[in-house]
Length: 118
Image (cartoon, rainbow, N blue to C red; front, side, top):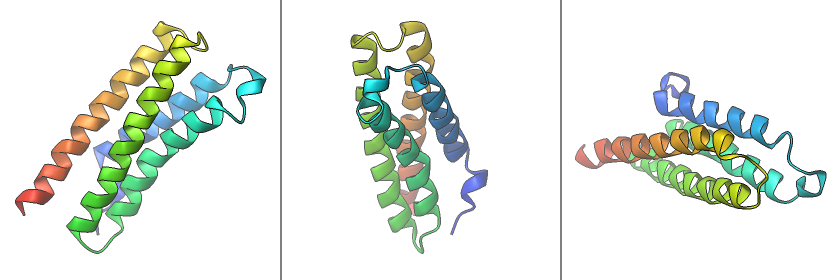
């Protein structure tokens, strides 16, 4: 079992989630149950799966949840790109979040590789 609160990847994923919530505050009301909800759920899924995996019994189980978190990262990227294409968010606001997600994805792959070596 790992202390997920101490993991840099979890901390950064929490930052992403916070930034996504703030970025979607100004989305149109008609998107409340659409893109706003989906984007927020994808963002929340990333640190949630990291922490759930950290609480499992084996590194293999942790790696499996990191894989799920990675899938959520790519889902989130798609929703961020779509939000930009639909002019719901500016490039100036979305680019830092996209860059954070890409960084967490790289960290995720690196962490998964450490479990493959053990």
